[in-house]
Image (cartoon, rainbow over all chains, first blue to last red; front, side, top):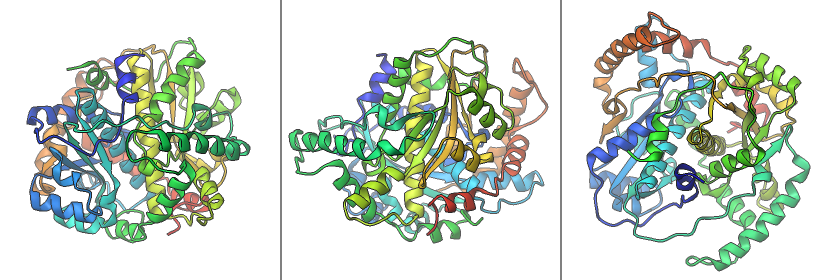
Length: 245
Length: 245
């Protein structure tokens, strides 16, 4: 396995950091590497807000349910899907205004995700660590106001980056054959696959070095997804110019 | 710059391939590396359909507007946001049925994007090349039918992978300072930034070794996004169990 795949497989979400900062030129290099990712029709529909103000960090940490690593990480970045820039140039080109199409919401959201994954992996490849913060979507309106996001820009997720101060095991993923289907979606295999993975994850949760628990993937995942409904998302996004049609 | 960031910055979309296949164990290693990406609440809400049937490839190529590389690439993969598996386990756990929340649509769509970016980068790191295919969203219902996708699974994008048979220059991205904002979104800087990048891209489009043209980023991007409205996306997604509330 080469260095790139090795870096990928070493990924663990890091939530404890030393106080050591990240040099500005290092952060620039990470973002630049992120931007090298593919972009749908080359729209580059993303912006990243670097949040350094401790008071803003504290407010975002509250939004995210108190996650202290948002305050403590060397860097905290908010990744935004950005159609403001694209709408500006559509209008400048006499090509009309963006009307809030679902397609454009999706293209921008995927664009920023591809870019962000590169940034995290680049960071991990030089010994840094980090974690995605979906919790900013608990109150995306408040985050948007704090960061002065214009219409057609929304905060998709945050990311903490810093020098790791914890050791974490890599969590075993679903077996490849569960997610890679030959020719057609193999729906009939799902029950046995989930049961087998639940057994494997129950062993993992009991044996890992910290945060041991009696649980399995189904129990964890069902609870997590049903807890995070974020019922405001559709109306929030529509108010910001997305998902209107 | 290390091997990981170098691999990222070498990315170009490859659309011409030699006939050489990709070994099954190589494809497995790429997908496994993709799965190592972070996943929102560890839901792993994705499935990848490997399309080998030449007739299916031809039909998907038609959907995507005739892109011949869909037929020709060693591998063609359809990346799906998959809440079928999650819904199954919610029901099994007595945790209810997923109601089509926008939050869950977004979490699954980001999940599959993070994973897919790892797969493409892993492929590029071993000398393969590829391209994302958003064109499958021209008729996602037809693609879903062809691949027998159940409810709560939708095809987000395709990906061609193979051995490159073309040389392509890396396209210059927006300058880092355009997409990285300090503390707040710097809306007032957008007009000058777009103008400067348009000038740089006009030079690039005129000077590159193939497909030279008189254009700039604004003209290209405004035309591309306004052409790709995909007006069916919202009703398609709602019919499949997404974006209902």
